Length: 375
View (cartoon, rainbow, N blue to C red):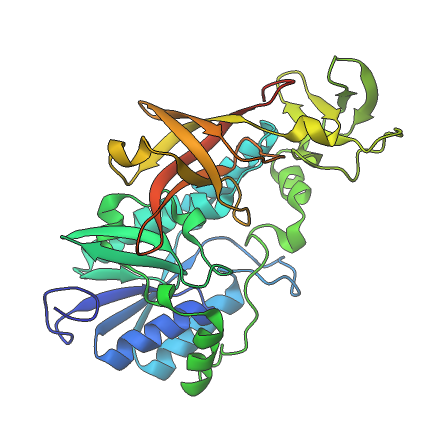
């Protein structure tokens, strides 16, 4: 059994490394090569970035592809580029726009992992007869009795398990995440020791197809008709203002409402059907129950019958909750206090054991409920 848990000698083990051009995936590729594995690096060309901001720190842009190729040449591994622009447009960008125009707050990075990365790249790696697909994600994979389980990374500040909740069991059995047990600072140190050109490269911050975080510009480009004026109303339906398009608002937003009030106003609901934005006070943002769609379950029914923890945003805290499953839907009762939960975000399930926080699966938030209204 080699270091990847595969019953082959290291030299006979073929691995595909997903190389984004950043320091994490570059270090993973270098470590695999250093150990003696048969390594092929693959970079995905996901969108046409000729007009992207030079200042934005993004992934899968032209410069990143060049960086991945330079790293591959330095560590002497095969490197391929897969041109997935059409797939990415239809599966990620269009889905992102559909979600925003429906009054939701989408997470395209999860959609990207779910489709072009862990579905299409997974299949391509299998077609190459690889033994594993290796990535630079900060998440831990622990194998027990032949079954792989996913856990939060050692470095909680870098943990990416929230973005990987849709990984299937078949994919998880094939995937490997070498950085799950180290801190980001250690990764950069390894890159410097190996003299990789990306050792000091900043982390990607923007969504790759959203220059400088300007979501509305992307939607305006593809769906200009979405910028339709409508009413801003209070909780009982009285019009108190006018908006320039619901895509300019997200649940929990306070700034930019432009309505004078003796108390701070927050966006508490967005109704795409009648093109209205509902505002209220902070107490109206507290959510006690959410409904989920499109579940991905990585646990037994018994594990989900207990009180478990959930995350409803990538940077959020773990919340005690009860889960009721119904086919591909779930009802989640939140036992802790949480505000500003938005449809379109992911809800990820965790349970604590002797190893750490185990990922049990999750789903997409379809509706939220509080004492005043449902969204």
